[in-house]
Image (tube, rainbow, N blue to C red):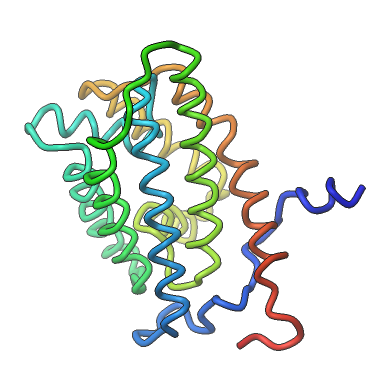
Length: 226
């Protein structure tokens, strides 16, 4: 019973001892910044592992890969381009980026750029699936860390929540519509959509929720938020 409670998915982003008290602060505590950077690097490494596995990427990476193949850029460079373009879509929605928003765009792209050439290319389907599962786990861990830092949403998340506020459409429907549209466009451009993409879509929600729960339990600030 204790283990089941321990692994129960979180229903919201918890407050931890490293969480910033103000998501729009320009001078966050050093510990918050360092943990945020670590979380984003872990997230980007997980994304890179999926790319190296070669059997399908996350919807947004399918798009970045499709763009990269058409303009002769690396996937890491195209990921950064996509982040900048999405941030421009914040302007009509009057959304404001935090430090975490900018670092999200930079560090995840950098992690993909650095890690993809270093990662093994699996020579069997079993190894490829195993690599995808490791990638999904790392993306979940990275998400749990960077979300609890509370220094602003990532470019894609902020755009989705901004659209939800402006339209009044339920967030799940907005998110689903964007993810499907991005995936279809990415496939049209030549991005890789295979079983790894489906595995990611099925697993990422529960994995992130469980990682948030673990972050909340391990990082509980106690009675007073500091």
